[in-house]
Image 1 (cartoon, rainbow, N blue to C red):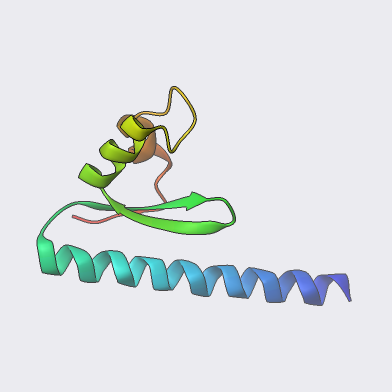
Image 2: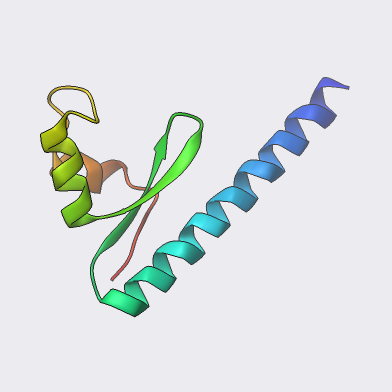
Length: 79
């Protein structure tokens, strides 16, 4: 029973990741800006590099988080 639930949860997470990647690709095609897909609080965050810089300035992420760290841990990067 536990394995069935875990496999369903894994499937849902993969689908959400696919949707986030598709959204990043659409936004890249429309704007030409670089986009990242990051894992954030049980979900996926799709933001441009410029938006991430602004969020870091505003304190959205924990102190010490940099754009270079975001590039390293990004699940997907456009361009």
